[in-house]
Length: 263
Length: 82
Ligand SMILES: Nc1ncnc2c1ncn2[C@@H]1O[C@H](COP(=O)(O)OP(=O)(O)O)[C@@H](O)[C@H]1O
Ligand SMILES: [Mg+2]
Image (tube, rainbow over all chains, first blue to last red; front, side):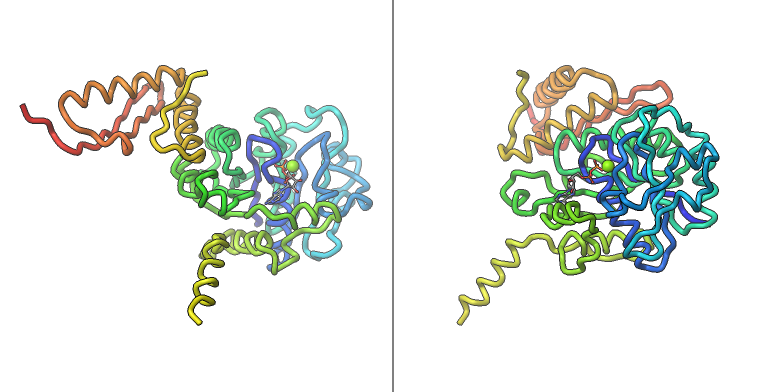
């Protein structure tokens, strides 16, 4: 029996889709069979992030209405053989899917998949209710900004109200240099305010934007800092303890310059 | 605009301080300005009797089962003697 995890945030644009897709790919790379559900009805997104937009035939509403079988709607990833996408519908009516239907769908999917990861739309309305309906665990994504952390706090409250266990936090777009300069809240500041467990710290990384252009996930690039950070998130999801990346580049350079100054 | 105190003045500490008040207000539906005044008055009253560390002061309001609980942690540095 698989595990259903919803990736949510409250505020839009903080990295839910980036996190859900890289997490899914990383789990698939570790041998798990993974289904990514795009729960953003009307604003389909995951297909382009994965570079699968040309392979979408059916979508989630077709499955729910019985127009097609689940297997017909699932799109297999090009690179990660155990990763599958259930695309969102591009229809206007968000109400066309009910929380009960989502719950039933998740129950069917978790019999076939080790992990079902739901990419939640922004906001706290129907889309959020649908995305959390069938989930057993939640991951909340935030950036180190006041507005994002505030919305994360509200979402953590809503996740609890849905009866889910306390969510784990991914802090995205982290910039160590700005923290050192006193211009970005530190990891401790954010954890102190939100009092949840930390699942990962993803640095700000241009490679994520480059990957979004070409439909490639940064986790494929084991040399990239953000790819490495997502690999660590995957290890922690598997229950392994891995240290957080040494993101303080400036420290590294200052150590390096000390080495040179010694000669 | 209503200004928050800048105990230390980096933009990240201002961010944290603003979040502290806005979340307290979100969680309890109490106006942030009222919370801010409450905290200041608290400090004023307690300071008459004890010297407290304002930087470590914590004000929390929890709402459960219809009860509102106001919890304040006021680290005492020294008790004033008369
Ligand atoms: N760590 C990061 N570094 C740089 N760009 C990022 C990072 N995380 C996300 N982005 C970019 O930010 C935008 C929003 O991310 P996305 O995952 O779509 O957010 P959401 O799904 O929460 O709306 C995307 O264009 C993405 O490429
Ligand atoms: Mg998204």
